[in-house]
Image 1 (cartoon, rainbow, N blue to C red):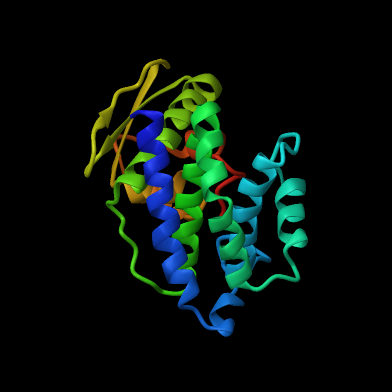
Image 2 (cartoon, rainbow, N blue to C red):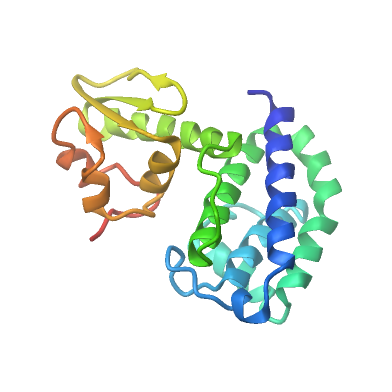
Length: 224
């Protein structure tokens, strides 16, 4: 997938999510997001917009650390959700220009946006397009990182068969293991949005316990 296409996915996701966010009540904006403990819907978006703003301001990385994300939220504590959306949209053109010049960063930015879009939709019980191109793209990027961790940390040759996408064969590792699941389930699982029991209950070719207890989740450990 080209950088231009990735940018298009980000822009489309931003447009769709912004339309949803601008329709929310103040009460909905303050709704806690269970998959982002301590954050409301507005806080999640303060991080998303803050990430872009800090990239444009050339704030030194990492921009996704606990310290950085807390700063992004705190810096926008006095803003309404509408004002956060205004900032995000105001920065769209400059972000597009930087994305063209510095293409690698837009991939994790898109994945972060997709994951947090789903976080918000789940928190508000809104419909989720689980088969969107952006969801499949994010799942494929994260599963590639998962395959690397599986091989390096557990010597597991992990094949991931996306039932609504492609089969991603293992490139390394000596112990074969296959996961068969939708892109959405892979994405929510590998980003620790599912419990350990839920992930273990997916369609595995063998017992995945060793992998689940070590390097499975991109962010933190799986819990029940």
